[in-house]
Image (cartoon, rainbow, N blue to C red; front, side):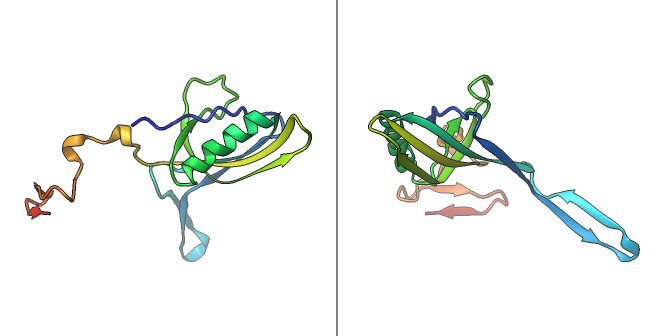
Length: 144
């Protein structure tokens, strides 16, 4: 199943921060070694604030509730002008009703690295209820 897509444009009040995953080791004499710790070294986090219609804000709220903070979804972080979307999760957001027709929404999106269901190879997916056997990399046969 392809992850859903969030259609929320990052406007001028939005901000991006990035976290690099590195390891540091200090040696005698003030020498320090710095290295990347993962394949995906830089993880983006976006704080988005937008004024939307009440209907748009409630649709986004419903979308985020469905994802429940743990299900990744596609989002285009570059104002919709970049064709490459990235996967994100959202653990926190808020709505502020400012009028009958307007609503401020604040959303924090964190870039997600992992495998989506569309990446899964059905031949390699283990169904623990099936009672199937499969071979581990070291040649051991496992029956579940």
